[in-house]
Amino acid sequence: MRLTIHLLLYTTFSLSSLVVMADASRLTMPQFLSEVRATSPEFAIEKANVEGSRARASGIRINAPMIGYMQMKDGSGTNHGLEIAQEIPFPTKISHTKKVRDLELEAQLESSQLQEVSLLAEARAAFVAFWSAYARLNIQKEKHDWLINHVKITRTTSWSDTAAKIHLLEVETDADLVENEVLALESDLVEKRNGLKIYAPGLKVDDLIPVEPEPIPIKFDKHSPSLLVTLREKELHAKEALVDLQKQAYAPDLFVRLRSYNGNESTPRSQELMVGISVPFLYFWQPKAEVAEASAQRMKAQAELQKSKIDLDGRFSSLIKRAESTQAQIRNLKEKLIPRSERQAKLVQNLSQRTMEGLDEHKKVMLGLLDLRIRAIELRVAYEDLTKNIMQLTGVTSVEESSK
Image (tube, rainbow, N blue to C red; front, side, top):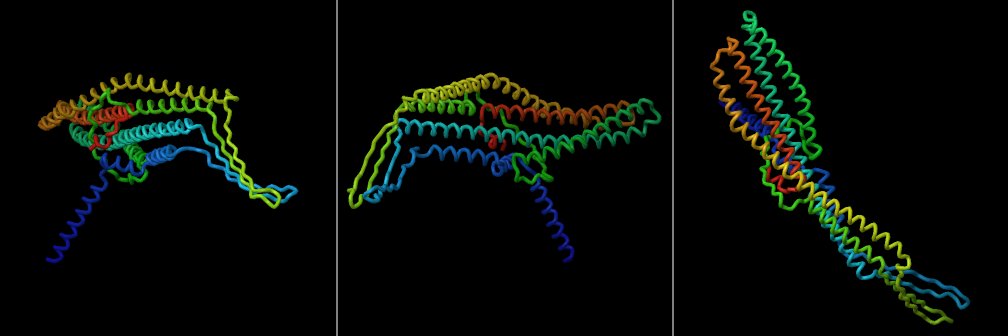
């Protein structure tokens, strides 16, 4: 009795362990995207870019003061002293420099957000490609098994019917072709599985089983702000502020210097204060060249902003239309074509496979059903590519939430 109980407990524990292991090897889209955020070096790079830009934007920028020690020797002896000098930029230069750095920070924040959205879109597409390779491999294996079984059935009648012999050769050829596709898909599955590590280096990809991800519903508004356009606008504002800053190069800077000597037996203690200003307008061509360079950068930013708006207007409508069409095709396959083909597969089981008509109908219906399932997977991949392009174009930020 005790041995029976121990065996039952061991069996129960073993089965529960297998279930846990099976669950642990299953990977969902939200889990993968969470891993991407946690381990992708691209996210670390963008975070470092933002922190660096935020550090540059903090505080004001003034050259540090100069403190020097002086020693003067003459016939009366040695005199020691200190010197303190400070360069003070024209006030508008300080304010304009701070404004440029603040605007550059805003542009960097938009750029980093856009890069993160783009990376998540690419990672999502990579996961769908992995799931697609896994699903297509299983379907092709199922097709190969069915064809091998169909070959066995056909051989029982092939020696008495010439048409059956022809059918047998055709099915054997189909089985061999599908076997080649299985071999190719096994290699493709390994490649797609390893491709996940590009986005999530810390992910253990061996023996992972992907869970079919939910498609992102089309809820993109053409009139909603695009991250790419917003980024170009921020960059333009920064370049405009840079032009204003370079124009301040004509303004003079203030210099203050204080010298103090201790004095000696023959020379009294003394102090010297000097206040001066720079005269940059004497070399007017230097500020002029800097303003011209900044103006050229502003013109480039204006052109890039216009290009982004044209690209958004030109591509957005066509991408949305194609995505809606692909989504409708997927819905048509899943709700109409595949269920109808499954009903045909059930009905065809009643037909005898000892006749040529039965053999042909079995082959036609079963392979047609499997091909429809593969077609649905191909359309799912095409839909994901379209939504990836839309996300990268508009900068949608709800990638993770949409996938749950």
